[in-house]
Image (cartoon, rainbow, N blue to C red; front, side, top):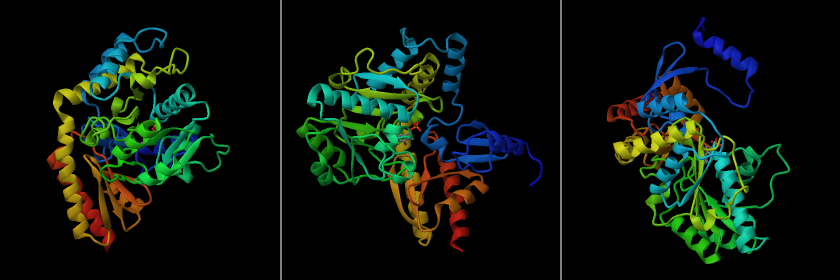
Length: 402
Ligand SMILES: *Cc1c(COP(=O)(O)O)cnc(C)c1O
């Protein structure tokens, strides 16, 4: 490899950045819409969107303008004072969901931490002090803090971190009977992703969320939906639970909420959030003016431009195209799953090689679960861009089939 602008970045990363990530040898420096460019000027089509984050595409003008204007006016003051964009964002999130109130933080893991704390508080106040346990699902993913790795139903995130937190019980995803058998007088909540993301884009059967809601209602416990990945239009509704007939008690959001500006949120009903009184929980940066202004621009843009409805049509096109590739390359693709623009393809060849081959052809895609190719492009992706994604994938599948 010759001298390139990227080499200096690679060397600095290697020398000074913690080795927690296995990175591709690419340094992305600029983006617009569904395209990004690396330090050497090479263009890529982005069908991953920073792992389901840049739902409005890169550097959406409305979000960029909101960040720029807010950065000029006020960046941070703390939650000791009222914050206008935070208040407006809370109203916008409630207007688009079941929620009565919102607590703001900075990431998905933190939103789930807050949900775990609120559920325990609810147990303490309403159900009796022994009702503190939370049921979560095998192959789930809820974040990387101590509480959220414990909640996560995957062994690989827990290695070496004992002792973990007390109080979690695990059942298979999409198995209502297992939940029913696990619930006891010591349970305060069920925590579940409406579609498992990191677990491999796993869509539950119709009626699963309704069944969970029914169990929670019967037992008087809380239903918490982790919509960190499925939310903000990704599946073709503002939140994925809106495909079903139920509402949760608590919902967590992050990833696409700020279109890349870090922000997380816990949404809840008045019945539950009242146990989060003054002093019960806090975050210095949570909902600060800059993050809130970015997220408010995201929500208002989604509403104004009808982008979420587009995700349904584009998602159907992508899904159908992938299914066609499955028929054309039966030795490569096993199964397609997904909803809206959250789509996974189970592969019969190692997914890491496919992701690498896509990158070499200028296409950014991801992986999830054991061997699932993950496609979560920006919701603003055009028909031509979907066609381009599919034809690049066809080239790669054709190569690996040899
Ligand atoms: C990404 C993700 C998280 C963790 O979010 P962070 O912002 O990385 O802390 C939690 N839950 C789900 C479902 C996710 O996809």
